[in-house]
Length: 397
Image (cartoon, rainbow, N blue to C red; front, side):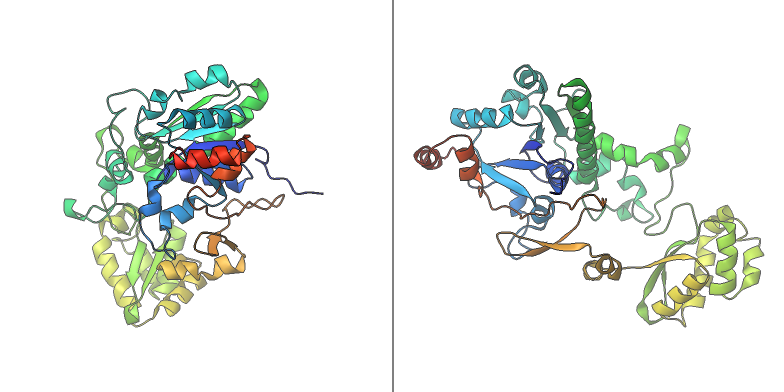
C-alpha cells in the first residue's frame, strides 16, 4: 500500500518572498502539497540574497523553501500572466505576500479570481491587513514587533535595553496562521465546494501571541516589567550563574517547588518560610536579594552539579545552549529528528516537522535553485521546447 500524505494532490501557487508566506507554504509542502514558487527572473525571492551562511546559500531561504518547485516569471509581461492563469486553473491555493495592493492591481484579488476559479482558495498575507489607516504601510518583522508591543516587554530594564526576538517571530506567527487558515479553508471547501479568502495580518498574528502581557496590563494597569531572560512576574525563574563561568536556567511555578528548591538545591530548608520569600509575589518583589542568595549557593558548583540538584528536587531546568548546542542536542538526535535534503550546495541537514504523525512520513525534498523547475512546469502546460527557449530569451521566465 502506497503511503498517503494529507495534502497529496493539492497544488499551491505562491507569489512569495522573505519569510511569512514561504514558511507557510513550506509546511504545506511538508504535508505533501505541490508548491510552485513564482520568482522574479534573474534575482528571485530577495531572501536568497540575505546571506551566504549555508555553503553559499542564504540561511532564511534554506529554512523556508525545501520541497518546492521554482518557476521564474516576469509578471509585468502579458505572456507571464497567461502562464500564471494556466497554473491557477488547476491550482487549489494561491498564497501571496506582495506589497500591499500589488496582487489586486495584477487582477489577483479574491473577487477577480473567484469568478473564474470558484474552488480556488486565496491567502493574502500582509503587515496590517486589508482596510484601516495602516493598510498600505510597509511592514517588516522588527517593525511589527514594535507596533505589536513585543519590544515593550522584551529585554532588560530601561528604554535602551529593549530587545527584539532573535528570530523573525512576527513573520513566523503570520506564517503559522496562514498555514492553519489554509488547512481550515480546504476543510471548508470539502463541505461547500467553494474556495474562500484568508486575510492574514502580521500585526494581528503577533498581538494574539501577546495575550498574557496585554491582559496583565488590562484596564490601564502597569504592564509586566522587562526582565531580560528572567520571568517578569514569577521568581526565581530565569538564568543564574554557576561556578566555572556557566549558566543554568531554572523555573519555579508553585510553593511546593519553592520548598523543594530551598531544601534540596540551596540546602536551606528554613528559607522556604522566610517572610521575605514565602509567596511568589514576595519573591518577585525581593528578587535582587533572593538572587544574591542563590548566586552565592551556586558559586561552588559547576553547571552539571547544579542541574543534578535541580533534577533530584524535580525542579525544571535547562542548559543555555548556543546554536551549535542545538545542532548537537542529544534529545533531537535520540528522537531521530534530522534528515538530509538536497540543495544547489549539496546535501544539507533539515529538521523534520514538529507535529509527528505516525500515519505518514513528511515530505523532505530539496531546496530549489532559481528557476530550476521552469522548463518542467511549462512542459506540463503544453509549451514546446522552442517556445520555452523563446520565453527565456525575452526574459519572461
